[in-house]
Image 1 (tube, rainbow, N blue to C red):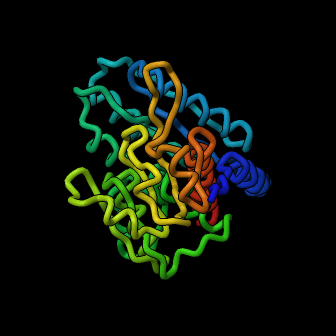
Image 2 (image 1 turned 90 degrees about the horizontal axis):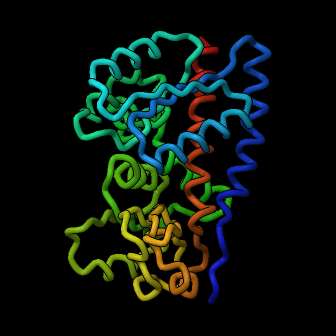
Length: 284
C-alpha cells in the first residue's frame, strides 16, 4: 500500500478563495477585516511565519499590521499595546507570535488578548467553549486538521483516533474536537507506556510531538490516516515532520506531507478566524 497524499496546500488555496468572497461581502458593508501581529525578538522561524501570515492576509484582502518589539522589551509595553489593539475597531484579530523571550510571561500576555479577537484560540474562554461543545474561535492547527479531514471525506464518527501530544495549542483542543465529532480518542504523551500498542489501534493518528521522524510505519495500523503536525528543521536546514514519511506512507492510506500539509492549513485558519471575528462584530 502507498498512501494517498493529503495536499494541504491545495485545500488551503480553496479556502483562501472562499475567504476572499467573505471579505468582499464585509467590505461592501464598510468593514475590512484586520489582523494585528505582534513579533517579539528576532527568532528566524518566527520571522518566516509572520511573513507568510502577512502574505496570506494580502491575498485574502485582509488588512494586516505588524508590531515589533526587541527581545529585551518589558512585559508592560506588550500588554499596553494589546490593550490598545483590543479597543481598536479596525482590528478584529490579534496574534502574538510564539515563542516569546524567557523574561516574558507568555500565558499572561496571551490571556490579555480579548476573547473576541483571539484568533489563535488560546484564550481560556475560547478553550472552555470547546469543552462545553459550543466552539467560538478555535486554535488554528486543530481547526485546519478537522477541515482537512472533512474536505477529504474522511469519516471521524466511530473511529479510533490517537493524538500524540498534549499541548494547549494542538493536542488538547484536537482531542476535544475529535470527541465532539464522535471519535473514540486516546491522547498519548512522553510518559505513555507501550506507545506502539496505542498507535497500532488508531484509524486516525495525529502526531504533534516535535520530534523528527518519531512515528514510523511499524507503529501504524494498516490503512490508517496519518496527520503530521510536526515542523522540525534538521541540521542541514531541511524541514521534516514528526512522522517518518517513507515508511509511514507504505502503511497508511492517507498522509500529510511536511512541508505542504498542516502548516498551510494553519495559516488559512488564522485568516478564517479573523474573517469570522469581523463577521460577528459586523452582525452586532
